[in-house]
Image (tube, helix red, strand yellow):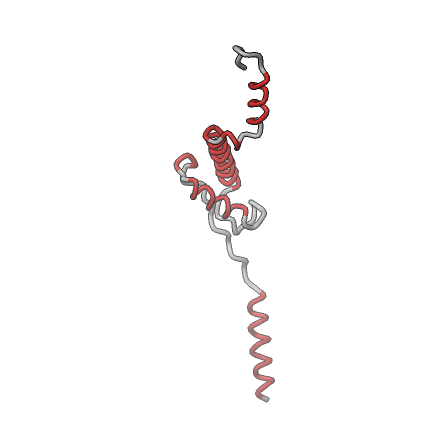
Length: 112
C-alpha cells in the first residue's frame, strides 16, 4: 500500500509539471557602447553570445545586432594589434625575408 501512495504522488507531480506556460525569455541587452569596452570585456561578451552556437537562442543575453557589433570590434582590434606587432617584430611579417632579399639584390644606390 505504501508503494501505491508513492506511485500516486509521483504521478501527480509528473502530471502537474507537464502543464503551464513556458518561461518568458528575459529582455535582451544591447549595451554598453562597444567603443567603451576593453578587450577583456569584448572577449567575454563574444563568448556569451556564441556559447550556444545560435544568436537567436533565448539563453543568449545580448541582441543579435549587439553580438555582431562586439564580434566585429573584437576582430578589428585584434587585426590592429597584429599589425602593430608586425611593425615591432619584423619576423612576424611573412614578407620580411623576401623584401630583405630583394633589397640586397637591388643595384647599389637604389632603394625600393
